[in-house]
Image 1 (cartoon, one colour):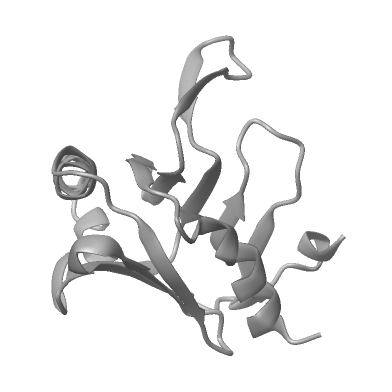
Image 2 (image 1 turned 120 degrees about the vertical axis):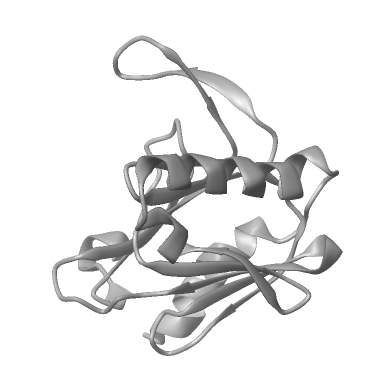
Length: 160
């Protein structure tokens, strides 16, 4: 199996969808794609989820026209910096008009780039530390399979 093609094929579900939510959990960037809907959490609260979610726990950077606007380094500073960074990203991406996924590129190391409308781009670069989850792609609110990249490779349970 060609991992690069498999990852690209799975992520191709994002093409044509809007990046509709930006948030965080601890130092993990969480992104929602497609229409936002309400769904109950395990604790009984209401959460807002998209058709697809991308959770990033490795190096990433968010660019506009080749200029870095935000990165994982902003998440390494403090809780306030994380909150401010996700708020700014949300303003750039969501409040300023729709931002659609135009294309997905993946290389042999599971580096991933989402080219977005309006000149935006998200680049995700796995840390490649064995046993550490780099990023995860899934349909929230469903029992569907998760695509998990761990240590720069597809985590084997993602293939079942």
